[in-house]
Length: 261
Image (cartoon, rainbow, N blue to C red; front, side):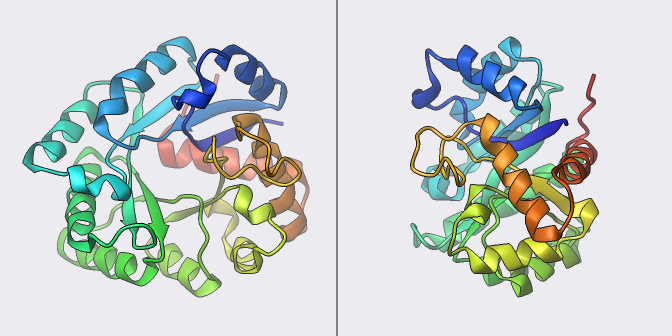
């Protein structure tokens, strides 16, 4: 069984000094590839160094909505330049909107708009973070598509309702589920996980955050634990874990243009 964890942050301090053991764990779990997200462009060199050590790592470059206060005229140019500087860059982001922890909506929307443009220009997917902002996000992406044409991407660590899930499926996005889908009271996430088409489903850990049941509360969350996300989705969708692994791995390769050995 081959799995792809489509959203990790293994550059965080909690992993430093012990990455070789975490790598052994994800390899033993059948995780054959990882997509490393990016919170801000200053992370790029460090993530690039990790990809030098671990050939199964692809990565993104972008600015997280909770860092949108750092956006200036040069940020977009920097992201565009870095994205074109390394063939292992497979996405722009993570970008998006977060109205749960921040109220600088206009700054977030500006940063998102520019990153959508870069993704479209470079024909790369966007990794979208969305929290308490689904309607605003839907409207912004719809306006972008109406004016500039389609953009591809993934709603990462998705926590929306089935109705909201349908909005982004209609816009052509993939939907990625993390450990939150395994939580006991995550009813709307579980319902959303049942309606995503087979060819739009992805899995992730968003490590080091949000460890899935039965590892919830144990830190750090790690790529090996994506197996529990796959198992939960298999139970929810009434199929085997092998089928979920095959579907999500195929989908990740398609979206991020990943070539497995």
